Image (cartoon, rainbow, N blue to C red; front, side, top):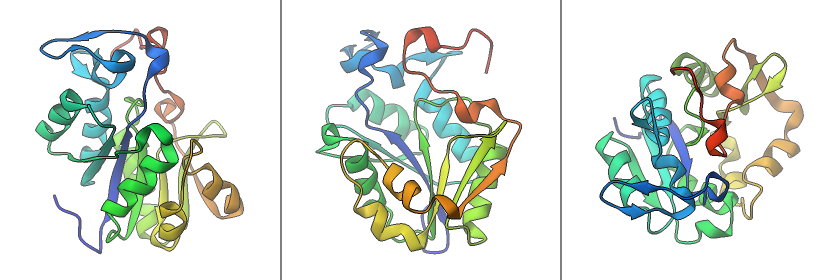
Amino acid sequence: MTHTPSTVAGILLAAGAGSRFGSGVHPGSGVYPGGGKLLHPLEGVAISVHAARHMQAAGLAVTAVVRPGSDALVSLLQNEGVAVTVCANAADGMGVSLAHVIAQTRGSAGWVVALADMPRIRPATIRKIADAVHAGALIAAPAYRGERGHPVGFGVALRDELLACHGDEGARAVLKRHHTEIDLIAVDDPGVIFDIDRKEDLPSSPL
């Protein structure tokens, strides 16, 4: 699937250091930075691949942004049919990575932005966010038991604001400016608030 001006793009943020996860070894690539959290197997599949597959199952073409030196991650994601872009300044914060990948997909009709360390979001939830953006929502996000989660959808009207993101805030400043315009969609999907920061966060039950 390719991006066209009439489609909502799936964005996978995969450029974090993952330093809290600890060290680890990936077969064939040695010790990976920050423990290579996104390469860590979960039910036999890398955490980031779960996240990418769920976005694809929702019908989105996915572009992932990674940091330099992420060769193993790039290979995994490209093998899944994910477009990958490397953000040279990813170490400067999530906002920089987000602006970079928005620039790479600037022709899209909107974006659904997901985090690569959130492997349990259901495709149906992602589809609801994409549909809301397609229907004209400025910002759309799922809410589980009243708590806003991920992924977050952004309408094309916010393109310039997303391109201006910087530092470690990611899109938080955009969300804060437009907090009264967020379309919260109630979902029965605990995956929208579940992420993996440390090895202890790895789920003990199957996905």
